[in-house]
Length: 238
Image (tube, rainbow, N blue to C red; front, side, top):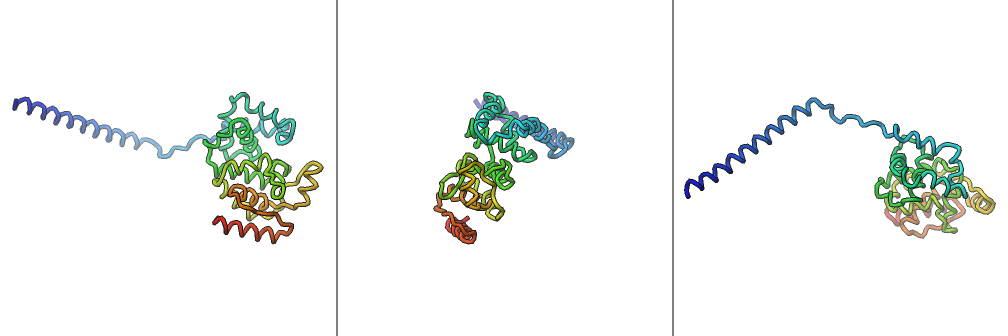
């Protein structure tokens, strides 16, 4: 009985010894291997994969993407029964590509699979939409909505509400942009929109108010709008 006890003890000892030696060898080999590896090797640029799709979305065929009836047809063609989803997601995330191409890609994803937002960094996606608004890459204000008294965020502007509060930081940056906003097209929209004299910051303020469900009202005078925006920011603590 005593010899059996010693045998068990010694077996456990030797197993632990062997295990320790294995771990030591692994650590030494790992250190030697790492010494021959360049730290943080640069990854290939994503633009190498996104350029073809970006060029396609910037072609004349897509000039009417944000209008009807061509919009739905172009969405289906781009989506390609879901085969283009991975390429679309990659293009949206590639900040080196033109804003309009990335915006069209995002709009296709919103139309066909809006939960793609779960795979994106929302602040970056919101910045894409803010850049599109500020740079007027659509070429018309209609998709951004008539805002305020019309309670119309537009087909594209509504995306900020879908993104939620994570979109706020990008929109807050636009509150410093007092340039005139995009022009409206169409008979009724153009007449109404041009009379409102929206600035870029007025669009951004409206979207923020909708995200936070804050009662921001429209004023004809710029100084009154700016005062209302300042009051909203103070009330929301943003």
